[in-house]
Length: 442
Image (cartoon, rainbow, N blue to C red; front, side):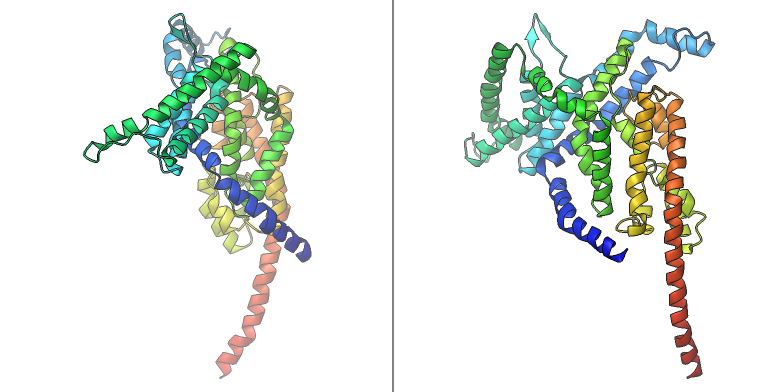
């Protein structure tokens, strides 16, 4: 057991930890993560409005409350959809500005100007103007990858021009705001002069504008991101990174967020159209089935710790159970500890993998309602799962099933860990007894 543990630690320290560290510090991963974080409040409110607009009742319901809600939402559908259309419907506006500002900040540029430049670059290729109207087709999830690419491109144009002193410099007496406006004139011209002709050329050759061509090229990857192997791989990466003491959730969500948002937009469009929801693996699936109580689904473990035979673990359980309700489990991860603990490695990694298989299989069989809303990650699992699925009951049942399975998987490993701690305590007590006796006789 000792040699196996040493080998595992060596692999983690020599291969996994350096890789995770490089990924976590990668400028583009940080920028994408920051961009989605900046857009999150707008998307959460927009998602909440969608749930309000499409109440969780059958269209044939005769219940007075349900009937009143349904009739109200139908009568004022256009007015109620406005907040959704101006938040989730244009999520790429917020994302492109957030990514551009974050990346610009990392390159020591003015974040406001780099964010605005990214926004303009995205609109230039993704919002075609015809017959006096701007097309909104690619302003939601379908344009996410375009917004990321144009934000990165425009920021690099800005960086390159400034690095090579290709800029307009005004005297120091000129106000800072005015000087910044003139400084970005040339980057704006270069972005327009490159992206607009490129967009026209691609449209002339393929009949598709840039965001349409990008989605066409990425269609196999987007489809693969919604598969069970993709779920298991992302969960496995997250768990191993965390076991090594690295915040794996930030790395994995930074990579998966573009796919999740594109799929969420498709599910919301299907809900509005009354058609079958096409996607399973969204952020709500990740947060409320795979991270119940935090990474490793440790809320059931927190309850088990409350009745532990070891005083130290009982204390950790008392400290960690309330935060775990809100998916904050650092007290348990570092207090038990789970991090770098060979006894708890297997359940910590495999509990969310098993939960993923259960939830994915139940969804495929039509037993589990799919995600249509974005919820705060701190929402307690059963409530958040139901909220994310338009207040359906089946996600609550699924969360309870996953919690029971998690508890059953953690229990034997926790008992083994308790025995090892008790043996250690007994050995310490036996070693201290002679010393105490000697000291009293002297």
